[in-house]
Image 1 (tube, helix red, strand yellow):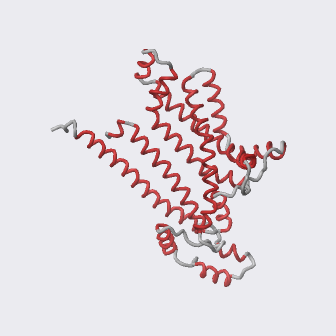
Image 2 (cartoon, one colour):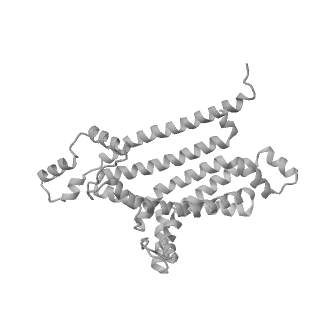
Image 3 (cartoon, one colour):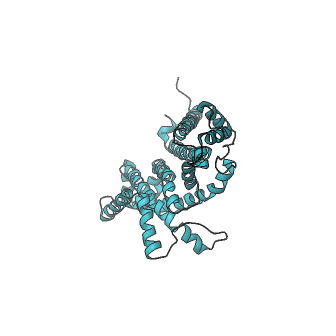
Length: 329
């Protein structure tokens, strides 16, 4: 017997919840596997914190004593079990270099990285959506070709090259902006702009290009649907059709495009924060690699992986909720 009309919404809701729960479970399992990969790769790095702390002139006995004191001579599986257990309980361990809890070090740097990511998002998302939608609405026209050339050129430029050119032009040549991005306490709006102008610009270049191109593809896919032709035949303007009909149907692919593009900030921020000496989480991870501070390195890497998985999870859930066909899949 077929389901009654009253039971269909309930069944569809259950299907939707099962799909979302499956995505969350997959993300959690991926995070566990990532933790194993992060620990293994960091453990394979040459040298360790004991050797870095004592220097090359230290005797093997001194290095061995410090390694024992730091717990670095324990078997890898014991160290991994201790680390993952503490991480699950909210304890990321003790920094081997700073001799203080990793959580305290991260709490000092994490707000800076979140501020940089938020500013980049506030600039990149509106510009990328405007470029992508404008390009799709003028498909094949001069504006579309010009925007395609511009976005392809932006994608081809790596962020380290953009950041280096920005420093050479705006700091060295014109002397408009500082080459080191350090925000002073109680900064004015002018100092705030000077601090973040070049880092945000360097991150936005590639992020905007990627997001705009994927937005253009999502909007064009909807513009080719029969309902758009029907709406145009009824006399609706192209702009009204895009705003009222196309964008609501394209929200799933657009959110996916935004999540994929914003996840690029995780990798791009490492290079940009290092070039501009910005005191964020990415530069902290680079310093942890240099000093072989494994607990700090592993905690930073896990945060980046968790943020990436969260963005992908939000994109998947949005696509499921926004697409009626996926709801009943």
